Length: 405
Ligand code: PLP
Image (cartoon, rainbow, N blue to C red; front, side, top):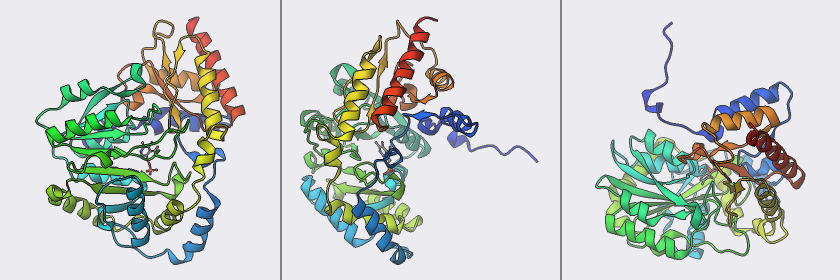
């Protein structure tokens, strides 16, 4: 039989968070090695289980959750999301503007697929959550990366954004709070981005999946609350704020210039219909979660487990010679920089392989987030304090050896 090749559509598509280095880690685990995983924001896998009321509700609902629902989702969770948009001051959202999905991931793919024609450009942050670059490419569009500036705490570089707008630019993606940097954008930056979008008639895609995972008493502003005359598509879900990645419960809210987007919205509706509906048990968890006890607050408050782990990872990493880190204000990640003078890394995937092979610690290399230089990596600070301390001491030992090469 002839070899069966993958589609050429996948030629330039990557998703390194679950890429070849993870395959190697799995193989090592199969051989009996214990790997410390700092690679994925899979919250419940680190003993940070979802709030009990969500789990109990899921169990109670399961016997009645076997039917398909409306393609956009059940009314009650979508109504709860409308209330949530009101709290976030996003104007004029109706139930009909809310789509439920199997995680935000599915809806991110819809939103690009429904919009893009071959050659259409989408502005995406660098570093990014790499799903955006991948789905824009798969949808036939061209990802164009704008730089987030480490010197300014990883805020989007507005000049770079303005420089990169062309007649083919259709949209801009904002990930706020940010994965992988942990940045949280001030209102002034959001307003500047809205101004660019307004001037060039761009759709704003706002990923706000970490909007409650905020440290140091910070608050989050939805960019859609500042842009009632620009089309905004805002993504959120239960995965992170409610520690239920596996329930695959996400949503998307269309707001702002809806009247000018009737055709696009028809496209979204068609894609939602084609996959029938999001999983019903996951949909049913949403109303309980949004109306219930907001337990993430305890974890991120000073002294809370996630806040302590963030501080610990930051303190330990920044003690390593040549390692600098912008302290995250939000989310679950940090994106340390390795001084190229001390660590002349040519291929950061190879660097990640070597760290894994020598020290059994799994990280994701910075280029996996469409960062252009091989001088960063991402860690999650979800493991408990003992595992984090052990992991960073192994990273320090590996880097010590690297400097002496
Ligand atoms: N958006 C961002 C920024 C993420 O970091 C992730 C997962 O890590 C997702 C979306 C995916 O969310 P979901 O589990 O709802 O598909």
